[in-house]
Length: 108
Length: 307
Ligand code: FES
Ligand SMILES: [Fe+2]
Image (cartoon, rainbow over all chains, first blue to last red):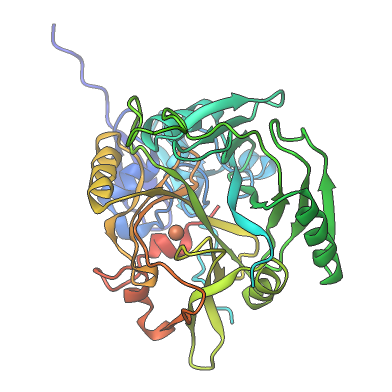
């Protein structure tokens, strides 16, 4: 029996208008890293460093554990999330909301 | 001058999910799980390490480092060093024996870089894992993953690394092995040792005060590092930097992330320092080669991702 192909999930960057395909069990960050590597700051890929933060504007997702330092409970209610821990379940729309990436030593 | 602080003793790391973290540190890194305590923390060690643990994993809602501990010669030295720290203006808190299982009292304090450091003198002594203390074999069978030998050092970021250097050298007997300065002579990075190793702690000037860059684990050879790189790829582990060499320390290195986003390093070799060796100096304009000797430039991920 042939498997029925799942409908591809599309993630849209609201501010840039760009669309990428997210495959099943792929994190949003992994999809962005593959299709538009320069658009997002990729750090640990594991929910700890906060560099990949986004805000979800539409669609439903499954979330993995995220460091509370970068997404508080209140922010999670406003649908902020770390893209490396976002698994889209439907088409989604998001905008990038990175923590301020800083280079050591620069502030001095 | 030596003050009776012997070596790095342990680090407690926060993880978001305990079991994936334990699997990472045992099956990939190759540490050995030796104990779990009543609070659910997991204790681990590298196979050459003589005490019961050197790494403690604690489940928490954010990643990062809770504290780093250094072993001192004996309980009298611990008492004396606590007095010296207080005289230097540091607020020292005594944590009673048994707060960490298998560990005696710990004297804990906040550092000028915004971290918690501690000293201890007593910990359950087990000898190395898997080999005898009498006529030991070359290595134990049954090791997993990268088969690291020991917890080696941490790199920490924060403000006022020059005050940190003064505290570590004047009170605790660390000395500078290498440092990075700008045109005005200000220190951007300071590497310090307690004995002959290239570094026992790395301090980086950063306004993200009190943050954690990596915990490093020691292997002996470049061949071991190549194998580490293979294992990182074959397990799909999040990579930071594939095997290469540092300019600073001349050590060989690879960086990757644990399942909670804490960076790990596997480190081999590195220069040795006798007490009469003056520090090596690097200039910030050549920082790329100082950190990654082959690529000769820093990667953004290496500079920006911290927990
Ligand atoms: S890349 Fe570090 S939290 Fe997503
Ligand atoms: Fe290191």
